[in-house]
Image (cartoon, rainbow, N blue to C red; front, side, top):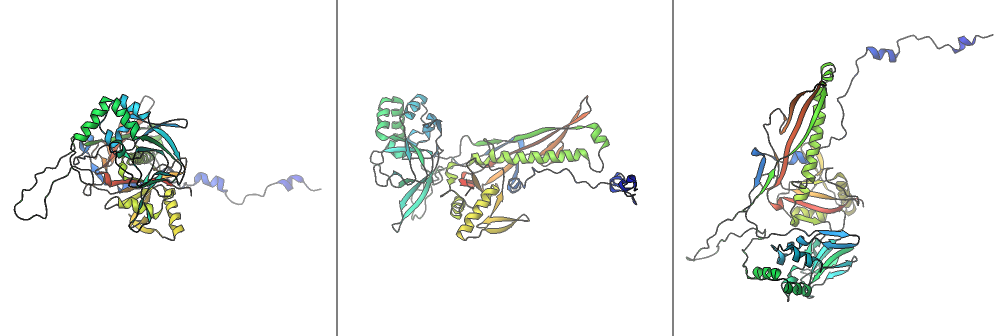
Length: 464
């Protein structure tokens, strides 16, 4: 009879097991890893300007063309209404601030719906309406030099056209405006506007003053003109001139990102080998602050690049996805475009469009990294550029540097307890619970020196 205890007995160990051996071994460890660290290309490509006093003033020549922004709307269910003060964006109403009159005028706009392909305004027809684009996309068509149909512009949410209808009864449409997508448009007849002006002494006085006022001449950029004579002979009287400046230039104040880092003294005293606990805590905290800094430089409503692009430098895509034609249009809006910034999914969508056309984008070496490029300009990924729920994003084009009147980053170097340029780690003391506190701060902002330094390609569809 076999002894079951012998059969069930485990084989006798002939050497030390790995579980026990690990108690005497030194473990190889990595520093703490952080998934939220990105390439942060925007912080790399911006030239950073020392900002003493915490404020950076951008002095410009006087700009005569004011009120070129887009119009805003309010919606209640399917009903859309223009925000009354926004009507001052229309050229005949610039500077008119009678809120009650603008409220009453806003109620006179008629909401209209257009399907793709519908003609909103036809070239040669009487210009008797002013239109506000509440939603959708429309193309501006013109007959080309060879009789073909040419798209010379795109109209998107917030744009307006037909301003001349309000003060010129003989005007006609020079171009045809045709809906590219389903469009919601607010329209105001010239007859309704004139009837309202007859009942409003304030508006009538404003319009009379506008007609009688001789506007100062401006160049094609809207800046007050500098009179210069050329090509003359003999001794004619030369024009006198001066360069006028903006009376109230834009000032950028440095923003701040801060947090309080807490480390228990027992952790810092006893668990500092082989890695310094305080240094690792500070390193990861600084990475998080830098990520927030880049996000603010893109999305902050006060100084963020997406919100500070001039309306004339915002263009929509022609068909939805970002095509080579769209990027060519974006680049052509400025001289010396240094860099393009786009969400990684937008870069992938651009690559698909290039493949569909049989075009190959550039592969550029930028700061030691191989990146996608177009026309010799690097297209750098920036995941801080938002992607909407509908799957659309934006692409930024920038000229950078003070010497080129471009986009610059603002910071302040020389802070007390500076840990990195423009970032400080300040000791705040030890609490009664033996917790050491450190104030981690970084100060930053961004400035667009002239409007054409920054452009945005809007409504970039990345889902198809």
